[in-house]
Image (cartoon, rainbow, N blue to C red; front, side, top):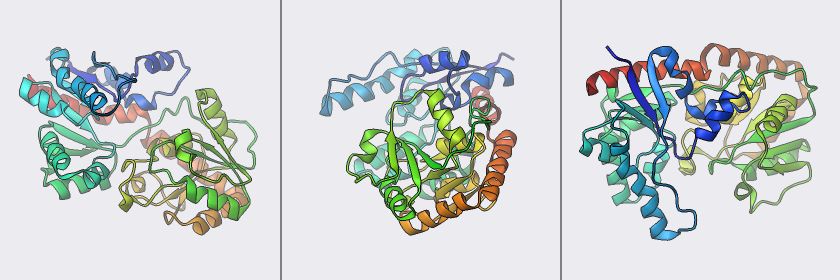
Amino acid sequence: MSAARAAFIYPNPRLELAAAVAAGDAPDTALLGQNHLQEFGVEARIHEPRGRRRHRAGGLLHRLTWNARELALPWELRDVDVAVTPLVNLFPLAARAAGGPRVLLFDWGLGAALARASRPRRMLLRRALAATAAIACPSPAQRAQLIEELGLDEEHVHTIALGADERFFAPSDAPVEDYVLAVGKDLARDYATLAAATAAGGFRTIVVAHPRNVAHLSIPAGMEVRHDLSWDELRDLYARAACVVLPLRDSRAAVGTDGSGLTALLEAMASGKAVVASRRPALDAYLDAGRTGYFVAPEDPAALAAEVTRALADRPSTAAAGAAAREDVEKRFTTRALAQRLSSVIESLASRHR
């Protein structure tokens, strides 16, 4: 039997990143295991839609041109069995109407998207999800929510844990400095609480985020915001951080994505850093509270300040937690392990497509 053929369609271009990964200049975390699948018998490639975002278009025209690329995708992918993608607006419905390929939907934030959707939008999402061949959720909590809210068959929804590039992000001999690091631009990031905690705790904080994440904040003394860093600069910040902090909005706020913070969490763990995180259901499968990091109540500056201060004061315990976090990544949360988990689902779907 021939190998399963899969195409990965990401929300934004990835071919340039893939070239940088192949050259060793960037981590492969954002490729979702695509570059490792050949090892597990799956022919996988990146496909970039022929339709492109019209950056100068706005409003309705922008939305129409942005979503139209999903309608054309099935005809661009006649040579594959399975399409792996987070694109959910129209692609699953278009693929079903066109007779393929089978869509394996990667769930980044379906729960939050459903919660804030209008009634017509929610109905469209339900139909699109029903048209998928399978759904891959990064955490058991996200899987359980989809099954409960949408009544999906349990065999239709899989838990496939994410992975980090443990070769790119790794413990370093660089001297540890007296700052905590926060990374991420998802709208669920809670930099207002982090700013208040920084002011209350008097510690030094470096935030790597998009300017929109902090546009309306009063930045306290001791808090520095950076953006547009190179991969090497980001890796060095992880290496030198005393610990990493992951401030998130309460999941009930339904802002950003349900899996907000997972990439930064795994990068920090791969770098051998303990993480202080706002508790969110999706994180429970990755962060072992008390052993690899620490949870605090979301949107609670006092609790966040107290836990970060404790982590900074007890460096031996914080270092031990970072070492345990690195061990967990090596055992369970690499991109190669992600690819292995994905391969079995892709092969199952491909066999049904032939």
